[in-house]
Image (cartoon, rainbow, N blue to C red; front, side, top):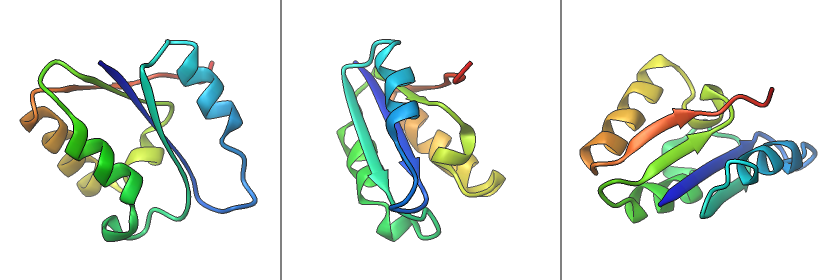
Amino acid sequence: MKIAYARVSSQEQNLARQIARLKAIPVDRIFAKKQSGKNFSERNKLKNLLFSLKKGDIVYVTSLDRLGLNANDLTKLIQLIREKGATFQKHSLI
């Protein structure tokens, strides 16, 4: 299954551009959230995505900073995705 994650940091920002690009892949499911990504414990959509992953799934994001906050966070999340037997792809907005 192709699964996407889209996030903006505030309610004022718009998810539409990310979602449109992810739908063009196309993906089967999109987890989207308008909130700061500072604390993993508060990123419920991301936790739901990780929990739902199955072997063979592909996770797409439009930008690495939408998934992880820094290199450490990003590395841990990609490792979790791989441990589930899924893969990760960054899909450019261009």
